[in-house]
Length: 173
Image (tube, rainbow, N blue to C red; front, side, top):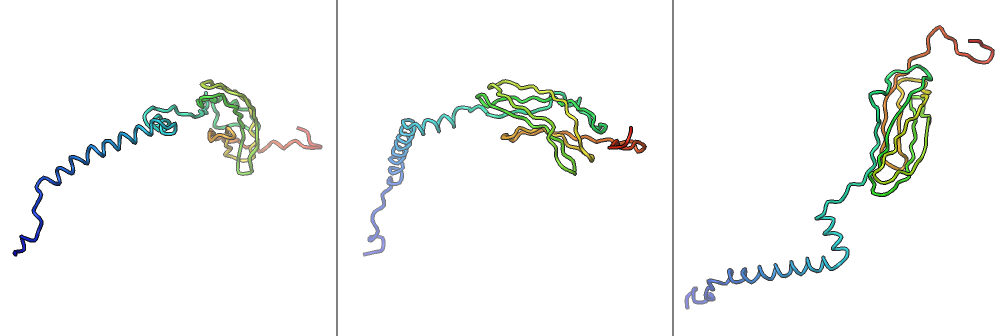
């Protein structure tokens, strides 16, 4: 007996035949998996999230007249700030805003309000503030508490003229 006699005879078409049978079985398993996922509510939801564009839900906050914002002001000079809150959340949202001024010496709240804004609507706000920053620069911030949106701008506060004394008890101006 030789070494070639001990080996089993070669089956020439075996790998191709197995591949021909495997593809239909894999396809049937795939179709079964898709069918089951479409029957289950969680599966249908996942298909919808994957195949259908979902609307972006967000809030937009912007200055309506940014070119009109001053960069230099006198001490206690009033500043008009106009901004808009736009609701793209897909439902009415109760917003509140806070306008504050901050310098190296601390932060002071200058104005605040709240309103319910309908879906797709814009809340336009114009507020007159008096930043009381003791030092320059002074950062004026409009924030929406409970939302990540905030906008700001910097002011340089002109110092008090050197010859003028500060009015106080017992002093005349």
